[in-house]
Image (tube, rainbow, N blue to C red; front, top):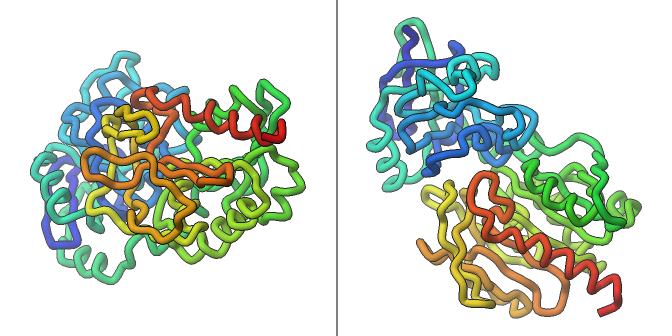
Length: 364
């Protein structure tokens, strides 16, 4: 039987069983509290650079369906679970899935204890080893101490498209989607209202202008929004797009990038928001919505920019979950309005964006 070893940067070691390929991976260890949606989570580009711990104890029991994937391939670096299902409803077992996708997994450890450690001490650098031999723990601890945090990498570059991709929609409208690691479900929802030009994260203002878009969307994605490569490309381009008064809509990382474009600051959350039941209040109507979330950074509440209104807040910890500009057609949300998986309570936000586009086109 394969051995599974999980080594944390604080020196904690979890020993369990291994599943999937014999392999060693390094990443930021994060947890997701959802009861379903493991297929979507494995393929969500926002998890690039991370080892994913799932708190729900039984994973794989409803099999795997390629139509549920949020990108074309696995994006997490490693997987930590309590127990893999020995059966599945469509006979696509998790062990075969892991082997096919070269994804190492450790199981049969105390995932509750591990989750509590991350809640109290924050996400950590970690090394996950699946091996058929004994593992030299000390060697891996030394290796990890020398390794920079995964967020020092330009993770957005890893998951962004490499050239322009055109998606034909149902109307004559056109939007440019700046791809920082977009989920397929976001594209699916945009196509209900317009055609989509999916462009790389570092596409210039001039290249975007040539596409003659009616609006701009900045997608979700992984890593630190203040990474120098993002500040020097996506944020710079976005500033010029905002100055040109394009309608702009940001989702998750896109929300943080809009904040940076307006001079706001971001900070790293202790353990992030990763799950499908986060309550968020919309101040405009006073209602509370249950949302799908996957992010490790947030916008700093205090701001001297009086043109921005924070109109969404997380009811668990008070973090900013959305904002809009007083005069310009610009707004953003930190959560995922497309759900997939998760509740569809906030799908109306896509319609809200296209109302802005239509209003600008009609001169209002």
